[in-house]
Length: 212
Image 1 (cartoon, helix red, strand yellow):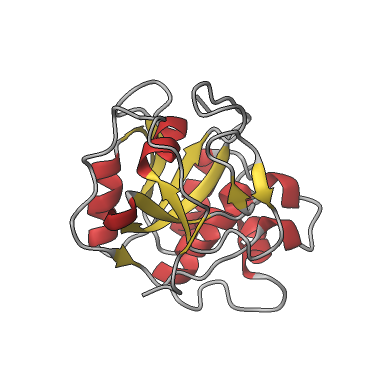
Image 2 (cartoon, helix red, strand yellow):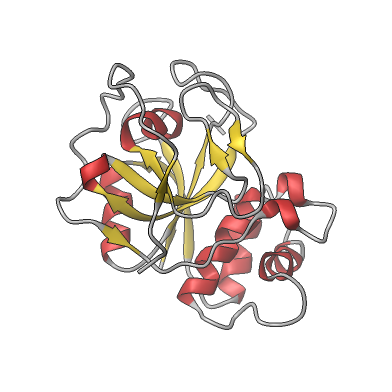
């Protein structure tokens, strides 16, 4: 990688001096939040928890778009992971696309993401899995890579609402403030600083899955 909800909580104010020129004017004027369930990768009953952010993010989207599709014993994202593993590894976008197709969800892996595209999907009632770089300072992000799920926007805060399966990310310094299960629910990730970690090769370079 260049890897109605509950009331959103913030990850704290972020300095205005850190600026992503590709962002800032991309959010609509009205707030929007989809009532997507949150799953944590860090409470997985499998051995894959540290590397299943992509699966947990897609499982959240699937559970929202196809209610009941992951019903059964155990945790929903673990059941989704088992479906992914029929097609490949949790980190493989093609395996994710195939697993979502098994659940009746069309998905297209794209590397041309802009904030406006995410907003358009949200306005259609569709959450957006997004891949971004969570290591290193915001001025020079690096990966690995990480996936989370955009579930809404908060224009007043200049933020996207995010279900992060790994917890509450430190968008300025990199890494995570908390990885406790549940700590990544309905976070405000600033368009300015998260956008820089997502569109690392410039405007229109974000990794995402377009669902329908």
